[in-house]
Length: 373
Image (tube, rainbow, N blue to C red; front, side, top):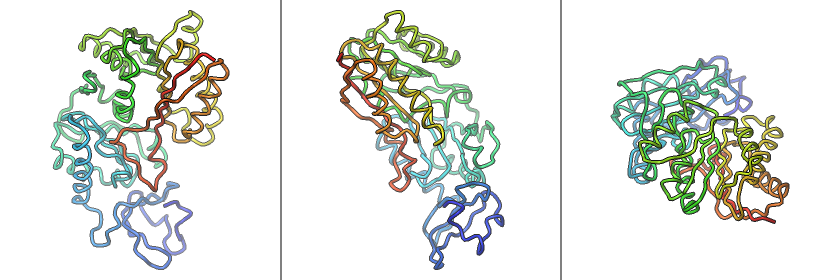
């Protein structure tokens, strides 16, 4: 609920402490649910439960985790997945990623921060992992006036975890990496890529730990070049590659600069994957972000050989699927390529979409065949 939807004459928001629990009723006093409040945020309240007989408690969190876990166990043979995805799992403001016997959590709201201790106990009861780490360093916390920090909730976590995906074991940093350390949301798209890479030369741009590139090598690609600006990420990528008997080419540098240099040098690939960070985090960033996506896709298309495959991704919620497709099309026309969309992907099933919350559907991936026009 947004702050302008609250009858502040009857219930002044300033009377609530950040994270306080409350009952929500309509203007006709109909019970709508139990929520937590943050008077300092534009989103002033988030519903936790609509059951009037059972206010939020530790047992509710245990129940939510059990329900979330049953879905993931049905979907995945191994315990590497997003265990809890905020509102979509009935736990707004909370993300939990499972790396085998270690869980990494992120809290984005004051209300969930108040429940942090109960969440930890629920995780211990339902999962009983070796350790739980709070990686609360996201910029989203700034919107709720929350400090950023890293903290071990319980246990003695290792500095790295292993994630197994498609026959490759990846080394994942648990504290210094991006987000929670791994991008589970792209797992289904990475597996979908495999049908296109047999005997192919693959370029993995914004590679991070090499999930696309190393996966392609395991699936039969003859070459994989991984590009990223992070030296520490590339170091882990190379360690994972060596442990799996894979030999990628690794290039450190700005993605745009590297791709321009590759084009100037006449390099060509059969498959190019561009999986950038969110270029558009706020609505005001849309014009600049759309230009960046167009430029990125243009560079990728210039590096594709005849009838090559482009995988173009965006995790920016404010970049709609139609806008991303438009950017791909404009880029293709600019370099005289004809693009055919052969497959459309989204976030993996451990990131379920809440039908009433469009923001929970954010990841787009287009698999395109780029023909010389």
